[in-house]
Image (cartoon, rainbow, N blue to C red; front, side, top):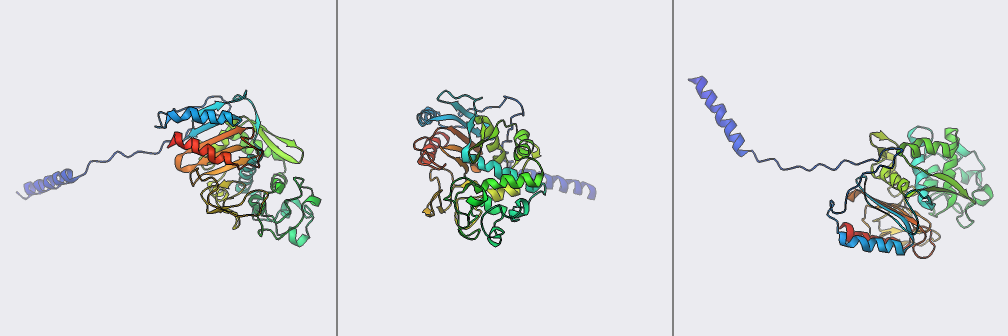
Amino acid sequence: MKFKNLILLVFVIVSCSSENEEPQANISTPETTYFPPLNSDVWETTSPNDLNWNTNALQPLLDFLEDKNSKGFIVLHNGKIVIEQYFNTHNENANWYWASAGKTLTTAVSGIAQDEGLININNKVSTYLGTGWTSASLEKENLITCKNLLSMNSGLDDSLGDVVAPENLQYITDAGERWAYHNVYVKMQDVVAQATNQSWSNYFNTKLRDKIGMSGSWISLGDLSVYWSNTRSMARFGLLMSANGTWENSEIVSSNFLDQATSTSQDINEAYGYLWWLNGKNTFHLPQTQFEFNGALIPNAPNDMYAALGKNDQKIYVVPSKDLVIVRMGEAADDSNFGLSTFDNDLWAKINLVIN
């Protein structure tokens, strides 16, 4: 009898538990990031309709891009191409210059070298280049760290042009005391070359370019080292950033370093990381000026967007909250500029009509 009562009690408990159990909600899992294969033209696509975007606003966006002297434009969502368009006789195989948008390639490779234990960005630059790489006194030169080069606060005179020979790298103030957009960042390429005991291009190619299937090369233009590639290669680099430094299952550059690179790097220009521009901050500084401007860098863009911005409107926009990478190559949309221009805000107004 006791045995029967025990069975009955168990049956009642199980029955009550089943009756009170709420049906499981459908839990949506984040879409897996797609990575295009290496050494291939294959790249999966998804349509704006699949993302419930406003397709009525798409053609006006493309017309605007064409009118504004664009050459290549790509939008990725979770790695897949949603929009890919070429204008003004350009095509998917044609190369174009990244200008200062390519500074962020130097950031990534510096991070790789640090991940490998070859450099430490908190070390002084002279640890790797020796003393006398500037015309500053030894005491002042030794204040300049690799992080200062990546953050644009070396304290060196930015008014003397792009030449980075010692006589042109003159002291204005102590490192960390002044933010100024300056070609001296390129000394990080020399740091990496010295620390790795190989050429900058070779280390870049083997550690970054080839591992994510980019094409292109560094070309010297006067005193500048400028990267040239097709538009898809720029999109591949943007995708690497969007994926926090991983490509499929391989870590190319650590997410810890990239988190630092895409956060405010100093206390003068809130909108600047390690050669990356940051949106959504309260104030920002611009090249060639010491003025502080109030408000976000690009008001129409998402607050969490960070960007690589190059002369004459070369753009990489990465938007983590929307899983978007957007790249634009071309001539200057309007007047010649150092990277940021009114075109950024106007372009985002058009993009928002499509994606929101």
